[in-house]
Length: 300
Image (tube, rainbow, N blue to C red; front, top):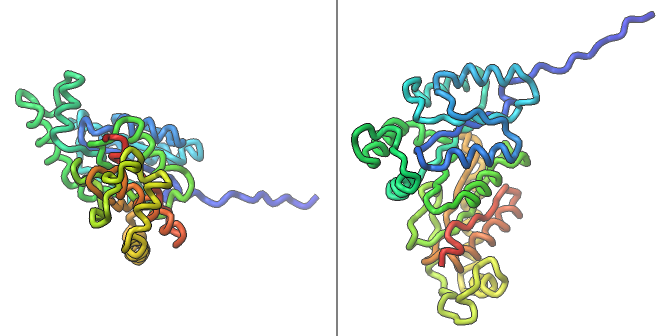
């Protein structure tokens, strides 16, 4: 009998492992991010010391498809084991892995209020104040924040909003493509920390001053139609979409996978929402992966 040829499957590559590393400010929302990643199918390793990152990556790679999507959540409370995070990530890349680093952050006063609410000390404050711990942690994590692939500002997000944002960013579809978020916000609540572009649409008339539109939002047809009919609105959207489309290929070549276009008006309810929605549509028509997200809608 002729011998049967057994076809072996092609060798797996470390680059095929969808590896996400989550770090950031204590109180910034790492636990919520971890839960959201679990919701979209990631195997999550929580409170991992940086010194064990490479070992854990090798273990999950060897375990096969069951852990093909893995997230490691690093906690400053394990600082006794801390090595250089940027160096550890570089080590992973030298070994063939392609990790994505996500940094969660929030404004100092927001972090203080969160610690006070749960009546916990900051893990690095020692005998000082909460703000002292925050400052020490910011110094420790400065390089990681600077080199992160995605920065998520949680200052004005509740748990459900943060979970939705993460699930949107890390859903399995198009996981390796550049993902663009058009993020509406209100200038009176502050510019988002995670903005790559900041767009000011306060040059458009404010629907707030139209009584029948005041209580509605930019996701509703009447408000959206009013905003988009204003002189210059469609040209503004088309021009900005062209600018983003022109830079998208460059961002991808540089390894950037997330771009946040922050679209601001006064309160983040009418103009910015309508423009963010319309901008996402135009970007998708150009073949880009774009999704709207509304930070401050509902605060008024």
